[in-house]
Length: 408
Image (cartoon, rainbow, N blue to C red; front, side, top):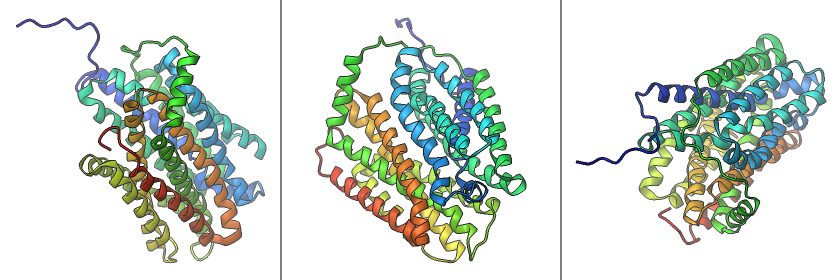
């Protein structure tokens, strides 16, 4: 039997030492990125007190970081096609870790806000290119497994950052909290620098503004993709709004919890990780058009449950909301790439626009949660989130009426 010579590497497989290095490096990168991004969320009540700002203003430490990340994603993705993946990822984690140190040392409120915005921009290099790097460097039979480990790192990072920050804030205030996150991020950046294998299968694309413009126009004209961008903005906006205000609610009567205990509620993120994987399996079986509206209804039910006063019931509501949100986002984010590819290309631009809408929603609607809390306490926050989720549901139902290009 004749075998054809391989002209390019087939990609790393489980068992290969380089696959293990890649997996550990991307897990560490995802952990550091999302630990830094949401590190101030459990600190919002303390920041408001220390700097004498309103709850809405304290939420700017989250909103400016996510806004900077969202804007930078529009540049980082196309830039990686020209300049490469690994270099951008290494620099992204390293520079954002250095800024994390400066955040812990910020002399005043304007400096902290400016540094958080810069940190968001620096963080964009990882989420913009991680999936493209995995597709190129890992054997196709192991894509899902490697991608799952990266996503697990992002979920664990989002949870770990909040838990560590909350615990350290109890011990030494907000500077100790951000200093702990900075130390964690430096360690992760070191792992990425040492372990992440260089690209083997990346082929640089020549800069072509016309081609980029054509693809961008294509993915902005598709009504299904526009609906998915809207789902990203409204679902994420509702999700972050609830969590931004949760710290203020738990610090107030009747709970009177410190940052450490209040931060423990973020452990429900583990439910979200499991829900995302389960939603993907259900989408394969029943279709995305069925699972996304169902996820919206579950998220709405969770938000409504948080109106209850008993702490266990409130936390249950947060867990249900988190499960529903991750189901929606997990399925919708994959749907974007499938839809764009079936439409003739522009997948990178479509994913970048989805993530831009995702973080724009986080920035705008998450920031408004402080105003909702100030004006109407927790019912105001629930009202904001429920309104956004009703829009999410309407967009999901609209998707059922748009002709499919593939089974979705």
